[in-house]
Structure formats: structure tokens, C-alpha cells
Amino acid sequence: MSNITVSPKRRYDPSPIIRIAAQQCRKGLDPATHQEMADFLGVHLKTLTRWMRGEHLLTEEVADRVTLKLGLHLLNVWPNAYDDVEFDDIDDDWPTPPEAPTPPTFLDDELNIRDVFLAAL
Image 1 (cartoon, one colour):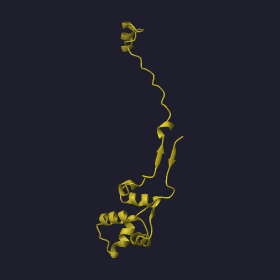
Image 2 (cartoon, one colour):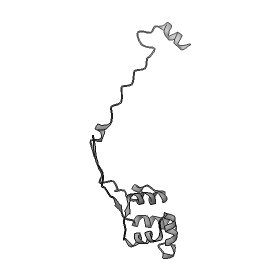
Image 3 (cartoon, rainbow, N blue to C red):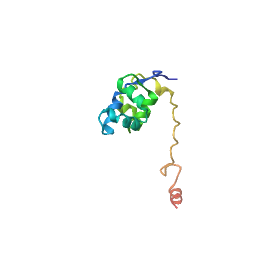
Image 4 (cartoon, rainbow, N blue to C red):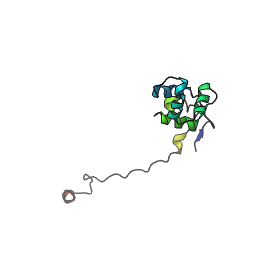
């Protein structure tokens, strides 16, 4: 069986989210628009403020939820997010598919021209 090792608690820098949200809201980082940006991201204003100050990192769940709100995938924002995942012989765990039966053809020696004609009717 394969061993898949994943970091137990991934945390993400919120600065790319803030930059993308500001662009999508078509607002700058003016404090007057922070509430609009928080509403756009679906988070509380205090949460957004903590992110902007660099006081908190995003959990994987929050990062995924927020990137989806932006219409993106987590890997669009943090392309190296899963670099710590290690796959060890993962192909060995897949079952081997059964051999497909060979379909009969009309060119088999067992069939004669009469059988071919009757089968076509």
C-alpha cells in the first residue's frame, strides 16, 4: 500500500487573496472599502483586517473557500501548496484491469460464408 504523507496543518499567506479581491472589487486598499471586500470574500471585517496586518495565516479550509469565492482554485493562488505531498509507489495499488474478451469476427475459421450471410439478416 502507498504511503501518502501530507502536512497536518497547512497555512497560507493571505496577501495574494487581498490583492486579487481588491482587483476584483475594483477598489483599492482604501479603508473605506474594507467592509465591501470582506463582504465580497464572505468574512468578517475583523478577519480581513487581521489578514491585512499579517496577524493570521489562512487555514486550508478557509483558503479553499475564499479562493472559490474569487472564482479560482487554491492552486491558482498558491501554486506550490501541495509540494510537500509525497507519493510512494502509488501505481502499485491500482488493481490490474481484467483482460477484455476478443470480439468474434466473421473471419474466424469456424464460420462459413452461409453463417456470415445469415448473421447479416
